[in-house]
Length: 485
Ligand code: NAD
Image (tube, rainbow, N blue to C red; front, side, top):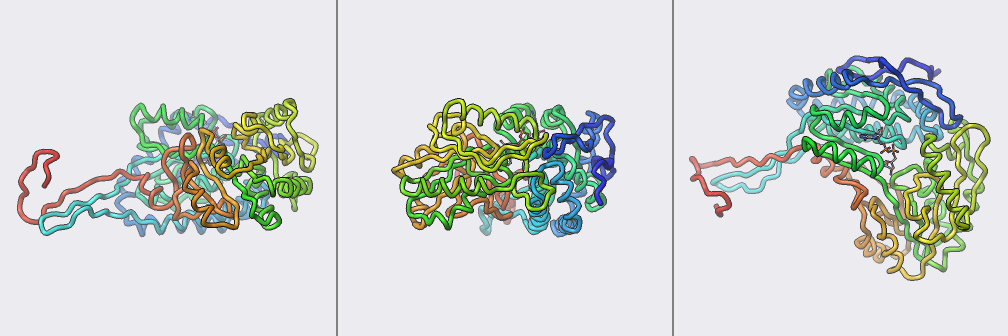
């Protein structure tokens, strides 16, 4: 049995610390607060950053195998507490428990996979005279700032890779979804040496205080593009490194050779999973003329048959919008679409009551300039956009300041591969969506981000390159800069 109103505490320097003040945490399925989370003071943040810095020298001095061992233990503990974490996750985030379990199991998997990552030493030259090598060394204390849509998965991405690389971390969940992350911190207490993993929670002031904090060497941020810009401005003051994983307005392009029946379900979940609160969800669905009507009718029928509700109830497929602010934004987009006379095809009714529910909605071929197409909705309103010519679809797909992901749906893999090369984004999926592996980098083009998470490229972002010139025979002559040697 879970005590939802438990005393949630932060993990600072290996200790569980309560807040001097607290923040209410709301169940989005009811609109009612059900628990409180600590609101870290400036002094508590200072303590977490100081602990991360103090822990750094000894942590980086461990072997990767020793650091990896801690990550594997963390993964085992998360996996062992999956049920409890999933129930809490659903209560604060809204997602149906079966899907919450997937995320938590995924986070454990990510930590376990991170344990196997190893930093390479790149050998630029190795001759009888000398060796030139590039090492990748950890940075120090890393700040990880996490959004509310995938709180545990995103936290694991900001724990596993920086820690295996030898950094220490301070993680901040969103004020909308702090509890499962705090609970995870409590469970992981004692797994890492003191100060290696710290988790702090707080309100709107905490993120800016972290990005401005002189004790961090790097900010790993996932959230909206608008906030990402602020993070980068603040980090620039002392040239902290940044990785920014930001918003998207991701296109799917469906060509007219597809079997509509075979792809409809994947397209549907690619747009609406987690009530469409996924950075990489399809947010503009471009469909070629010949299959447009059939796919629209299939998707609309699926939306009408969808079970919306409290994610804690068995059988619920789609939960609420996670928070009231986002709910108001999504409602405003829907209202604008209706006011502008767009063809709005609604799915099953949202449950009555105080929850933040929006029916799964398709907008039938709105103009590209309409708000519902031009803006990242981050909620279950899917614009379907009819096209005739594939060149036109590619140009329209690219006509956005975002560039996170895209998907292409066709039987012609060679053609899809060629189109993939022309889409301005960080990831392209062919006949699939949301596929991710811990070994593959993921990041945004244009205003969808800077840098990547995942794989060797993501690991290297948590390091500083150091080039070392090692003579092998005597003392080399000192060469003037830039002379060929
Ligand atoms: P948000 O930008 O409002 O908040 C993200 C995090 O930043 C939260 O923890 C928040 O408390 C913190 N924050 C807010 N203001 C800050 C500031 N000035 N300085 C530092 N931190 C600050 O985003 P959100 O609404 O929580 O999440 C939704 C957005 O995240 C969407 O745009 C979505 O596309 C994006 N997202 C991107 C990815 C990706 O991998 N590219 C993944 C998930 C979500």
